[in-house]
Image 1 (cartoon, rainbow, N blue to C red):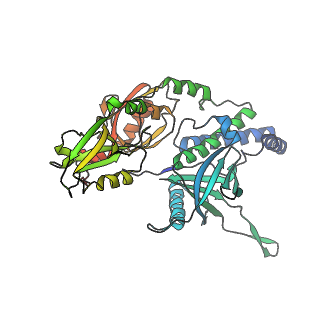
Image 2 (cartoon, helix red, strand yellow):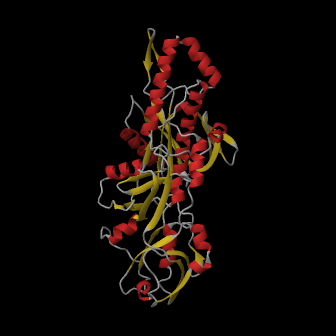
Image 3 (cartoon, one colour):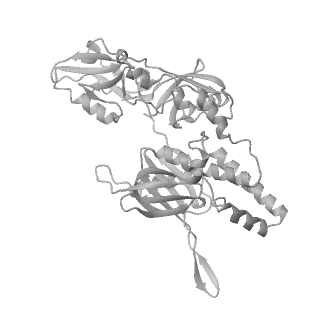
Length: 431
C-alpha cells in the first residue's frame, strides 16, 4: 500500500485563543479604530491562509464539543527539541517532524518506552494527562501550537518555546536561538487526532468572528452539513451484508501437507465498517485456485473457525501461513467483486468530500463523513469517477474532477495492492 503522510500547518503564534472578553478589551483599548480594523483584516487573511493550506475536511466534531474539549487515548513516546529559525516551509516542517520521530522512535526490534496518556483537545489548550498517575504532564495553550503531523500511527505535536534573552552586559541583550519542542505520540486514531486539532483552530476562529459580529460564508454551518450527512445513505452497507448468513460461503480447500494455500491477501481498506482481508491474487494450480470456489475480491472473514475481522494484515497472513502443514483448510468468505462501488451525495462544492487523494490513491479519510458513508476506503486506487476512467489521468486532473463534482458522485475503487498485482506492477508473494 502506498504510504502517504499528510501535513497540516495549523497556525502561527497569535492570540486568538485568549479569553474573548479580555482579548477584545485589550486589543480595542490599545489600538485606534483604523488600527483595529487593519488588525482584524490581517487576522482574517491569516486564517484564510490556514484554511486554504490545510487539506479541507468537513467537521469532525460538533463545535460545542471542542469548546468543552475532547479526550483521546494515546501512548506518549517522548519529546525532543529542534532549532527553529524564521518561518519554515511545509517541506522543512515535514523534515523536522521526521527528525523528531527518528530521535524518539526505538529501532525496529527494540522495545519502545511509552506512557499511556489522555490527550485533551479544546479551543483553548492541549493537555497531556498521565492515565495511571492522574496528573498533568503537559499543558500547551492552543495559540502556542505551530504545527502538527500525523505519520502513519504517529502524531508529532510541535510547540514553540518562549524565546528568552540573556544579559550580555552593558545593557545589551543576547537573543537565544528559538527552539521548537516536539512531542511524539502513538495512536490508532492519529489521523483523527490531527483533524480534531485542526478543527479546534477552525472553531476558535469561528468564535472570534461571532464575537465581533463578522460572518464568513466560507465556513459550512454545522446544521447545513448535518442535513447533507443525513441524506447520505450508507452505500454498500457491510454490516448488514456480512451479517446475513446467506451471504457467507464456507469454502473447504483440500491441499497437500507442506503446501502453501497459494494466494495473496490485502487489507480491505481503512474506513471499512467490517475491516478484514481480501483475496488479491491466486497462484495458478495452487490449492486456493484448484478448489474453484474462491475469486479475486472475496473477503475472508474466518479461517478454520478463527475470525479475521478487525485483525491487522500481518496477523491474518500469519494465520494463513500456519495452515501450511494442514491437509484441509476451511475458509468463511463473503463473495465480493474486486472493484468497490462508491456513491457520494454532494449538493454543493462548499461541502467538502472528506478525503484526500495522491496520484489516484485515497490516502486519508474523515471518519463519519459523507465519503466514508458512501464507501470510500483509505488505501484504495480510484479506477473510475462518474464513468470516466482515471487510471492514466494525472493527479491534478483527478483532484479537479473531484473538487468540481456535485450531485451523485459515482466512483469505482480497489485496494492499491490488488490493482498493482492485476496490472503487473507488483510481483505476487503467495502464502
